[in-house]
Image 1 (cartoon, rainbow over the protein chains, first blue to last red):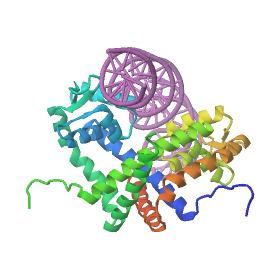
Image 2 (cartoon, each protein chain N blue to C red):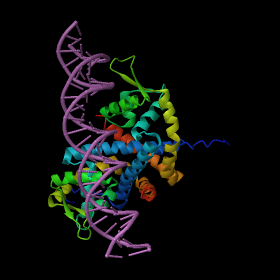
Image 3 (spheres, each protein chain N blue to C red):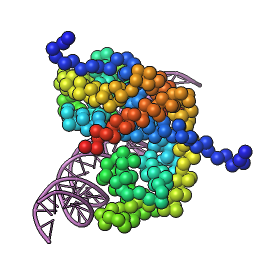
Image 4 (cartoon, rainbow over the protein chains, first blue to last red):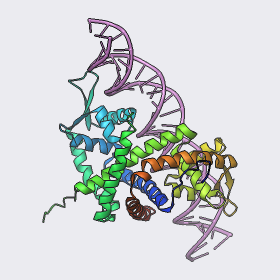
Length: 158
Length: 158
DNA sequence: CTCCCGTTGTTCAAATTCGAACCAAGGTGT
DNA sequence: ACACCTTGGTTCGAATTTGAACAACGGGAG
């Protein structure tokens, strides 16, 4: 055995998985970004904000909750919500239970824009990711990446 | 059948896979970015440039080849190579066979910086992704995402 | 009731990213 | 040799992202 603690490098399979993840992630983001911008004038980030708001009980969420779901920085969210506000897709309301709180709320126009943007986006996700994989691969992917996400959520909070 | 072509939305499993991918990707990038910056003063992108150069035959690659491997824009690469050049980790040489060509070459200092940065980075990738998954999950991930990447490489070129 | 500390959201400067425009050079067909 | 389309890299301006600093509030220990 070595006296110096040589790191455990990635073997061929591990490297393939890691590279695959990085490359697929970059390529996918690129394509989706392009499609959404061309098709609806939205960035992927903006689209996801609309999605999360739309899925929320009253079409509205606290800024912090939204930032958590999006996995982005607070300042980044502030910026994007301001952009969406200018576009008339989202409105800011103050939170009743907490004076400091700000609630982002989907406007009618925001809902309509999302309704129009969603089909094209989903179709592309399907074409580039979902339909490329078998049912089994999808299941394993969901399971595995769920674990990874959970793991990451934990020691990120502190 | 419906006369209007209603899009095929994602079912629960498909959505889980897709969300898992997006969330894991964002969280992972965030953590790696932080670790690399704190530990070695490099961005993930800069680190990857060093890695790809280091893996190349003579520690050098044409700009375009490098951009392909990194999955980034040409202008983005120009910027980052300039940064690395300022740090003394990469040098630009002109290409013998093509006057227009520019070759990015790893310097000794660049090699040393990479040698020092790699263990911590690999350890984190292992901790957050590789070691969280089973051997089977890793294999499926590599296989599946390889297919996805291949699919994306194809209709992206035109 | 206060004193403190954690939270919430914004602002700020700096770094990065992208696409479009651009210049210069390669390669091809005639 | 010549016109012409593609390639390779850089430059430019606009948009985005981030972490740190900040101000104001919430909430519990004493």
